Image (cartoon, rainbow, N blue to C red):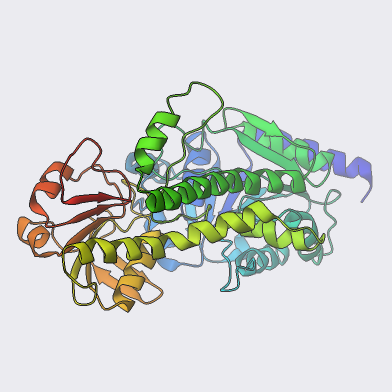
Length: 441
């Protein structure tokens, strides 16, 4: 097709988007995909959710919500209005105008990017790709994925990117549990593989996002996302390393940080903890680290940050052993209660949670480990299969040591401190509570 035809295709798609007549597909109905689906449907787009998990497909089709960041009534309303349908079949792609990909991008055991989900759904989309469609990747990945990996796979359809169809990257910026910043009011970075793709993608995202930030390419957009999370990982690692040093020096890292953060300029609050968790910070910096090797470039800060953050669960277990030793108790055989398995407070998500590694290490050391977390009452993750115990005075008193691994706001920490034998607080949840039974990270 000619460039003129590409311009015509772009203009036609933009008109459909502006009129809210474009049919949208969202591939992957998880923490990113489902909120995005609901936001698009709320403004009148017909949205098809595509997911290989039949349970998710059935739940969304019935208006049953399973993502906390989505309001139950919002999902029920758009389903009732007939604006949402779901399927596991990619044949529906041929009837769509915009396809947004929101699938996981994990790391393998060697910290190497695993793009199996991105590649798999891209091939499935390519099998049904039609002229004039926009494909946008939202999954976090290393710079170059959209251009160098997705584009060739999509062009196996016989269509050419930027000519017959449009291709963009717009990294998700979801912060699960954040009540202030949502899909709608979080600035959206958008990069296309060419000017026409960017133009169409900006029109699409601008329909539902308050402020869209264009960048010069899909690769720049990918770099933006991994930099954002690398920034956080490096600064958290600095706080963790200061915590390790303060432990050696007999200082309270929390007192140091509280005082440091009173400075009104030149500093940002980052805090230590038992490690880092979630779908971004433990993983995304390694995508950039891996990509840098292609250019014979060593990302020293990223590598060191990952090393420091991965050491923190071991440090927590070592400190737990010291706390018990001071009470003339061995770690082996001691009953330990972990308070919280979610990776952040007031969230039902334990992906990559450092509490999981603390749990594993304690069990490996011979401790009798239990946990309480009403947000994540059942855990099944790489050898950790456990159920939350009820938080009773008897349970607190029975534990030789309580370790606060997630600072959920629904816990009465004053009562916990008064009832437990010993407490190791890795999150400063006991701030303001003075007790000889409490040891801070």
